[in-house]
Length: 312
Image (cartoon, rainbow, N blue to C red):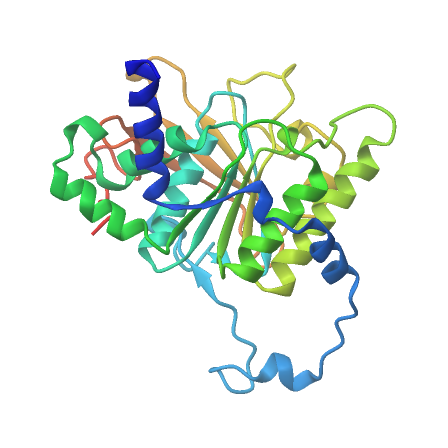
């Protein structure tokens, strides 16, 4: 094997060993389909048997930005749709959200079909410690490996995958691995068409499967869906700008729109906006101004704010 190939293989093995990897052969699609069809009739006490006594407790994790705390949290049993114009940073912001959840004790699973596993792990490591791989000491690398152990899992597939299999991967992650938060990035890579004959039915079936998994176990699922490409990207996109059928924004419990301000720096009131455009349970509706910290690759709430070191 040539030297460059050996080096790439070594790097790939090192990155994969730092986090749990879910391979395609681990997924039993037929078992998922059988579980999906099984009747789920339970007594009332099943729902009331919680630490809260007679109140049904809803576990949640906070987003990394304090202005949302208590107003809009990552509640278990829900599906959140993330949308935004291409190259505006929605996946980067979502990565930060997941790192924040991991710092709170959540187990997180990524189904990131647009990024190879080593590339994604590198980006997550950079965001979590505020340093590139080259800038980390051996001790810091060991600390990061210890921090992600039993906190981070990644589906080992890069490229298009059929929707039923993706739903089965989500089911496997939460049912068999006990994962709390799952990211599916993105919808267009799940074999779910955005137009053409029958596309609305296919989208509805896929979202219904994700919603059912989120409720059954429960967990929180983040699904990334791109906005239409023929629209003006000088302002945040809304519900009608999401590429797909009406059910794509009607079925999720929450819809978030992420927008990157590309005006000249001296004319900016913020670097980015996270807009809560749908919150079925809490009813929140509003924008959060954010600033970009280039060194840490994090979105922060104030220009002078220090980035968060999630890996501790």
